[in-house]
Structure formats: C-alpha cells, structure tokens
Length: 561
Image (cartoon, rainbow, N blue to C red; front, side, top):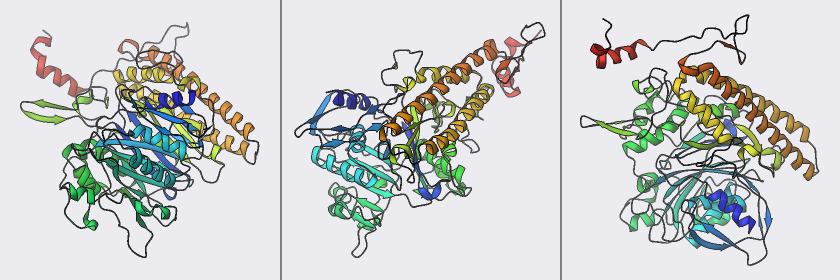
C-alpha cells in the first residue's frame, strides 16, 4: 500500500495538461563536453509545487495490482498488474540512468482529451521509469501500456535519455478509439534537440526492406538493434487517412502537421523557445528568426541541429535561463520590462488595444516554474553514480541546480515531498525560500539579479567540482550499501549548503534593497561608517524614457511650479 501511495504522490504533482506549460532540451553524447547525455525539463504551472519524489525498487508478488489515479483530479482511473520487480525512481530518473521529461501540446480537438479510459501521460512516464532500463525499453513499455489499457490524454512530446542515447518521442491519442499513434526518433550523435508544447517531428524515415534504420511497432523485436534510429506505431498514417486528415504517400506523412497543425501560437509561444536555445549554441540560426516570431510560412525550425561547440552541464543549465536576450523578442528591452528591466510579464499572454491583438513573449525562463532539472547520464560510471538529476525549484533564471544522484534513497528535507505545498508555507522548503528571493528580485530586477547570479554561479560551479570529487571517492568501491550511504550523505550535505547560502542571500537582499535604496555592499557584507552606522545608500533614478512616459501621461499635474 505504501508503494502505491508513493506512486500516487508523485503522479499528482506532475504538471497538469496546460498550454505552453513546459520546456525540454536534449543533448546527445557527441554534443557534450564529457560524453554524457543530457535532457532538461522545466515544469511550468501556476499551481505546481516544486519537490522531489522518491519511489524505492520493489519486488511484487504475482497478482499484485497497481492502482492508477489521475494526477490532476486524483480520480481513480484503473488498476494494472505489477511486474515481478520495479526499479527505484528519484524524481524523473531511475536507478539505471533512464530519465524522461515531457511537454504537452494537446493536438487536434477531436483527439485532445484522449481515450475515454486509459493511462494519462504522467503515469505513462513514471511507470516506464519503474519498468525500463533504457530508452528503447521505455518506448516499448509505453506502447504496450497505451495499446492494452488506453491513453486518456492528448498530444505529448517526451524526452528520453539513457547513458548512451537520447530520443524524442511524440504521441497522440486516438480519441474514441483505444490506444495511441506515435513516432520516436533518436537524436543523432553530436546533435541537440528541443521541444516546447508544439509537436516537432514532421516527416520521418519509413521502414524499408533490407534496412534496419527505421521500423514500425509490428517489428518491435528489431528495436534493440543499435542501427534502429526511428520507430513508429504501425497505424500512425493509416489512422490519419481513415479520419480524412491525410491522403498522401507514407513518405510525405508529417506527424506534427497532421496531429498538431502549426499556428502563430505554436511558433511564437512554443517553438520560439527551442529557437532561443539553438540560437545560443549555433550562430547560423538567423534564417529561422521570422519563424520563431510567428511567421508560419517562413522556413521551419529543424528538429535538431549541430552546435558549434561542446556543451557541459553548466551550459545546459544556462540554456534553461533565457528571456530571448539578443533577439528582437528580448524581454528585458521593451516597455513591459519597466524601469528595472524585469523580463517577466504577468498573465494573460495576449491582450487587445484599440482592436489590435498583441502578445507577451513566452520564454524558457518563466515565473511560474514549479521545478526544473538537468538530467545527466554518464556511461563510464556505475549506474548509481553515473546518473545525476541536477534539481532546482522556481524560476530557472534564479534557481540553483543541486545535484541529486540517481542512487540516493533519501531525499533532502528541503526537497522532500510533503514539506509544504502551494497553500502551506514551510520555512525549510526550498520552493518557498527560492520564491521569496525571486519575487523580491522582480521589484528591482536588473540590480538584484546580479547578486543572485553571483551566489548561483558560486554554488553550481562548486557543485560541479564536488561531483567530480565524489565520483573519484567512489571509484572502484564495490560495496553497494557503502555507495548508497555515501551518496545520501553527500546529496544531503549539498542541499543543506545550498539552503544556508540562499537564506543568507535572502537576508542580504532585504537589507540591501529595502525601501528602494541600494546600500553599499562588499563580499556579502553591508558597508558602515567607522562608528558602525550604515553608509548612505545609493538612490538610482529612473531611466529617462520612463520619465518621458510619466510626462506624456501626467506631465501637467506633476510639473514643478
């Protein structure tokens, strides 16, 4: 019963189906500095609480059933048989370094609500993590689940990552018909990929006689041939033909165009986030700028690109921190940013002035992120040590990614499930501490974010070095309990270090920026006179353009006489 409850607790905290809700980036082995594979995931929701769940590995007697509850309504859905053994899961990575993330796109209105009965996408992820050791096994498990029990959600894009491979997997329900249609493609070695609430796989290679590069689900026995780089449900095109959505040859079939037809919103609010990442790792993205800004007739963003340099884990974190800086959509440089260049816009995202519709940008970094992670999988290390979930809560731009090894069995208190909620404040919860800092920073963003970044960089670069030291300490250790104990102690130590440092930052920001002043500070200490009195603070004026706006609207009233 406890195991079932642990699964339920994680599922009900997964992001509910919401538009423009999440962002994923994918990095193949050949694209990274150390040869690891990585995926990133930001779970963005205005009601999403950031915490880290743990479900232990378990043996199950024959006949034991897993009760599945909808993660949004918590309504009971169905029960399915447990396998004889399930694997341990820390957040979104399991003990074999398999990690999975997602973004929702819903798809065709006729299909967006899924089968009448079946498994939702949140459960699909977590059950796959409990039952699969690698990406290919996960693809097979997910297909078997939706074909046997149904799929009660709409369109989704999944990121799958193991120590050797990275895959993008896109699925669409069949509406009133049981099951789902889907296609999965392996990200080529040396390339990066991304998805953000818009289906990304258009045309894809079809199975051909004499070739094993692409197979349909009818030939799952071939899936574990290393040459296979594309796999799809056998009815992915025929289902569309039957419903009148596609009439061409298989080779011309586009999954995205059929099941999630592109709109201005899909380009500007969704694929633009992928463009922003591509633009930062490859200088040749200018031709796709018009598309990212919503011109769906412009050249479409490629599914994956080759970066012009190798990407390390710290840069992967940095790529999750983006407000379209350096592009025409830069959120720090329009009047909506206010006098202190705050790159956040409160909802709604679209608005009308004098009959004309306008938009606020939807960037990778957004205020409503519940949690995010960078999953890093390293083939040259034992699984318990090789897999790391760099985990952070709240806004990606001002969070700190703290390394959690996939081999831990204890979650640090600050991330622990049940330590606070969206309606219950906790002094010891990282979610509330980080939100307190970021929400204060929104008031005078361009100044405060520099103080936050200083601590953020200090911690994350320090953690990267500590991970290397921990890896070396455990090199050659055979005792499993010793490894687990060391990982638990180390991850708890890092989380405590992060919390203590962020508490100090929280207090410093309050003292330094209280009442619109900026006190003088050096190395985290506020400066005083020789007698111990606070030095006179700076009082930066508003920028000239802001004064002009005030004059334009209220100049006569405010004019000095």
